[in-house]
Image 1 (tube, rainbow, N blue to C red):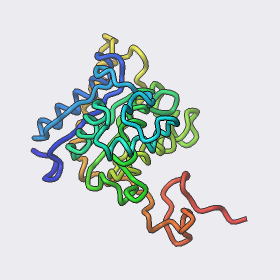
Image 2: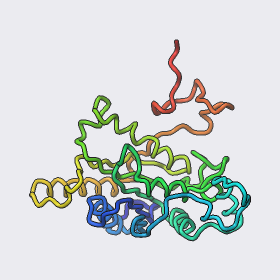
Image 3: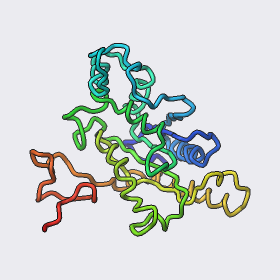
Length: 262
């Protein structure tokens, strides 16, 4: 049974250096569920692709300013000149092709692994993926869906509002907002807790069952992705001329909120 009539193609972006890792297994689980639902699947395994995450001047042989490297300006100029580097061009084309994008990675130091953060830096190009006018609810990827799927080593109890690792909703918000920034409808992250290094190699029935349950739960989330309400973010109309939240606008996060009255 298809997930919906609007999701026909999906891209999975994997950022883990070990092909036998639990993250790789989650990528496989996602692909299996999507294909079983009649969805075409493409995968960007960033380590397998040897994707260069470091934005640098050598990616821009055709330069707007050969004397001073301004990444954002050069990104836009390369797009306008049809001179985007081939690796970035291929990833942008995958994003344009996909109706759903799933990012699978381990949470390292409360954020994305460097290779995925660099992928964002280079692929979410100014001009090619967004402009000053095409952002947020006016973004180019309006109508497309995105979801983060992350693994963490600690138990779920430590990622609550009073947990020692911090509130997982706040930890993940900046990465989710990045996807909304370019127009995606962003679904709540899927978090696999207690996935420690080496856990995937355990032969104990308890551990294997635990991993199997995680993958089954992930498949269930993917199968019901469009009945799952996306996260809420502020729209252009919610901000005033100075880019501040208007008094009448709702607030959805501690990151963008109304100031407390003194």
